[in-house]
Image (tube, rainbow, N blue to C red; front, side, top):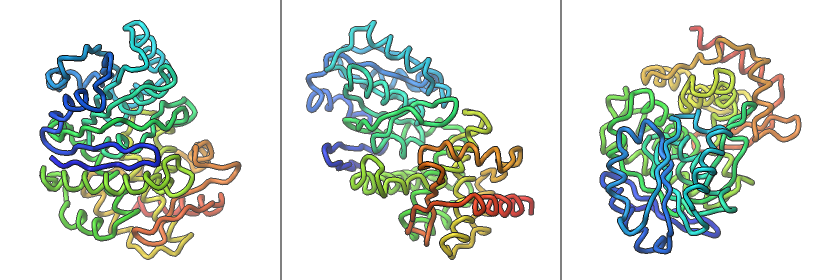
Length: 363
């Protein structure tokens, strides 16, 4: 197990990564969280069925707790589920010194974190992620629910007290979730570390190549990259937007397909390909996108998720993205691997890139 430290302007908190990290939960409530009056666990229903007993055994006996399961995946991030969580917290007598444990993947963490940010104007919470994807979402304090018109449109910045990332939970992930989470590892490499990208492309020719040790290394490096960025820009007024590489187009695909019909990471992978082709056009990126796409295909990523939709449909959804300012769509692009830049992109450039991507995907 390794401890990483996330340093924000007004808060510092630990991230425990590795097998057995859950043993750090009890010490939290004997130390920094010792005044906690009650714990509320908000757990993904699927994760609760698999690992609920493991978490219950780790909760310190000196603090009472309540347990609430929510739907798995993005369907949990709805107004109805958000309201149900708040109602449950009120009915069970939580107060301002209570603490929420977010137990599950990125969606459960987003929901539980937003409940914590909203309940009595904000109470403490701890992230206990159980997916590879959540190595990205559990760190940095972005919490949100979805709106039918856009992903993560209703939310807040609310930092956790700690992140406890016990990699034992990853052993039960289905292949699709491994693929989804690994897309965010690839994203971190593209925006921050050319050597890291080369390393993972060399060592991972299929998902079967992801050994426990190499995966743990990838997760730690991804968390380090994200931690460095968010420590400089907590509220996304500048460089934190780099973490959205691949997300503008990816979120449009998610919305078009319907939340939950494709995993977040799979949509982001397709979005990164679009952003790389757009970068070649806009910033002169020197990068062999075709070789990168071939590698993604070997890992099982579907890069033709746009096939059922016109450019106009996806463009309409991109204009709703929260990174859009006025009528201008902003994209995170790359001048080089490890050198991201934020650009305003014209409709002409977007449609030309869309046509290029569709042509390349038909080869």
